[in-house]
Image (tube, rainbow, N blue to C red; front, side, top):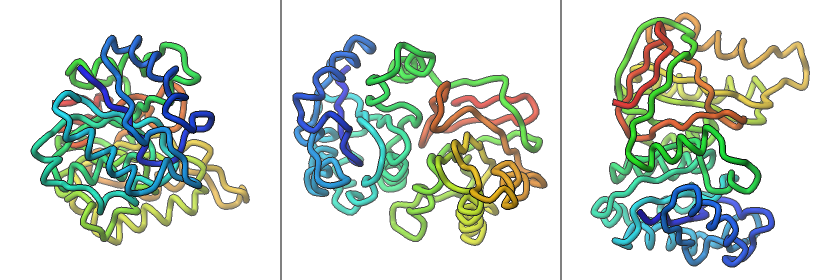
Length: 289
């Protein structure tokens, strides 16, 4: 297996050249025992972006077009992957399918690739985590999915009741909502949507969830997996908590809603994007089918 590293979003602090990514490549190579290649512009930095839109899109296309590359992984999140979506050749991508692993801002790229080209992948891991993290359960999960083993998690918490199966889409709530109304937003009919976020006040999360409700998303989905909403604390305690928001939006649902340890936190889990899953809110199960 050959893994290509791309930087479709923000530059990685302290890694402003391709050479500076060498330590990260070494760690990933040891972790996976695979060859790791850094795409030509992955170490670039232009303001808050890891290179120009043209450069970042070119790296994505080069990674898909290269028959030697078998998987693609983002270096970090931040912001910017949505800016390249209209610069990609989805016909070419569709002819060269390979899994894409990423997290956070990669939500835009991963959901667009699924919507326009049927590309699947996993959310919850990115190469940049190896900068600071020692071998963890997350890294073992990354190895597992790269080896083709389906995701399966038990001991989860049901917010409502019931079971559902469907293709999982979603990721970071604010990024996912940014695709609404664009050609890169996936069809949500009978899907399982996974959502998490970081650093947003409860009223902002309420606004985003209301946007999805008003767009008719909740009427169409089969179920929802809610991750963590890290550091999402109101400046004014009178505004309430994230739990209040989630309970108000989902607490009376007749569809299954399950809580999972996925998000901007340690101990996060890896979840599939574009793959069929089962969620069981009564037994606390999420598994890839």
